[in-house]
View 1 (tube, rainbow, N blue to C red):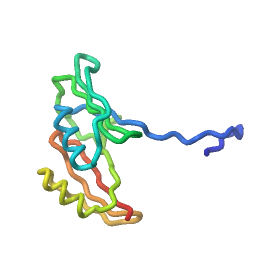
View 2: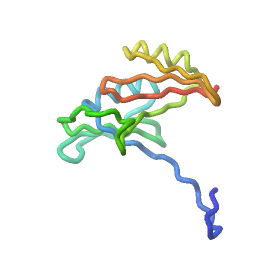
View 3: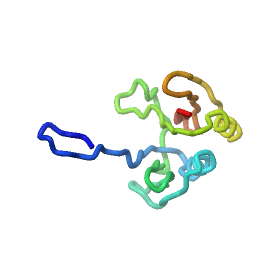
View 4: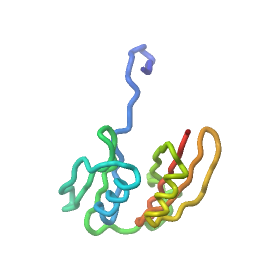
Length: 136
C-alpha cells in the first residue's frame, strides 16, 4: 500500500500490458510463446484495419499490433522522445534461456553481471530489443 499526502491508502499501480507495433504479430507471438511459455490471450481486428495479438500470462501481456503496412524505425529509440527502448523479462535460469534464444536464431549480447542480477539482450526480427534478466 502507498500512502498519499492526505493519508489515503492506495494500492500501487501494476503494469497490465505494453502495446508495440510489429511487422507480423503471428511471428512475434509464436517466438514469445516458445521462449517465455506465454499464451495468446486474444487476437483480432484492430484500429486502422490492423490486427493485434495479446500474448502473455493470465495477468500481464504484450499487445502486438500491426497496421498491415508498418514502417521501420528511422532513428534509435534511445534517442527519440517517447521511443520504446526494450522489453525485459525475468527468468529463473539465465543460461538455459540464452541457449533457447540462440536456438530461435537470435544473437545475444551485452551481457551484464551486476547487482542485483545477471542479464543479456537480443533483438528480434523487427529490431525490438529484449532484455532477459535473472535474480537467481
